[in-house]
Length: 433
Ligand code: NDP
Image (tube, rainbow, N blue to C red):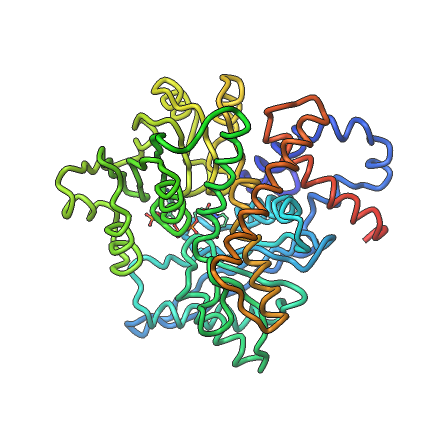
């Protein structure tokens, strides 16, 4: 805390991980201390921070701040998304990079942990401004990344369009046509099912958790926050498996549709028009739009927070419980505050943390890397089947680790322990680096 006084999200993430690793740490205390293992795993291998100048449509020069945190490469090249949002700062990127280490480990694939982004706000910018920004961002970032060193992907504010502009600039600067980014378009090395992967993976994980606890998705009522990439494809998969999704949101408010969300309409608003969720009620008069944050007061069986960090606090957790919600799985990274997480666990609700529940995105990114290396493309069904298998595998690892330490049903501890064990073994084998 003294070393990084303003990095509150990073402290929150580290504390949650270390608290739940207590049982493992106590067993190996002497060795970890001698090897400064915890000091090493909480210190990024490298933090890169730089200026991003670009010219807006009025001819005015704008300056943003860019980051890439290369946190841990014990089990593979750094892998993690790029976030474009005005709230981005070093502490947020470090929290995301730290979480990414354990998430990537859980996938069972050879990928280390990293994350990046900028405080650039893509909202209201023209295509040309987005391109100018992305080109300037990559002009600096390309020095530090590569198909075998560090492979960024999308995150909040970074979808197919942005990845395309970033990729074009990387190729222009390096002359390399390589899998340096994932989430690419299908015409230039992207993988089928990558767009759907985080949302689909979240629902596959939810399905495993419910089945293991004698419950089912079919027939349930689901509330999903956000209306971006993760929220949209979580909605799609939940609907395919027989759930009724009744609410979605954005940072301005939420829509409630008692008849079930019309996803084609949401996709038209968000993916084609790049509009706001409140436009939904213009076409569906039966639905209600409410300004503000109240989405967690909508009664449901299952809640899937898919927007951003700390969007679900203690009062929200209490409202969910009071309305009969029995399961929460996190599509976003750390969307529940520590108080909310504790409340879920202390009140008998099923809770799957983001680092396990949303790992399907990065896992499919790793499948994109494999296809790029082989110069092959797999079918949608093939990638989706692999994703499903990976999510089942993650659930098993998480469940097994929690049981091994007498913490059955504590999937927070299970995810942290299972992710940590593999990374630590690799770090130990590689000596003091
Ligand atoms: P998008 O940019 O596609 O969508 C983000 C959604 O969350 C938007 O609806 C946005 O609303 C809302 N949101 C963002 N910030 C806030 C805020 N401060 N308050 C309320 N709502 C907010 O991002 P993704 O769907 O890709 O990412 C969502 C979450 O999932 C993030 O936590 C991300 O880290 C995580 N994630 C994403 C993966 C991926 O593959 N994309 C993989 C693993 C995790 P608005 O338009 O108003 O900003």
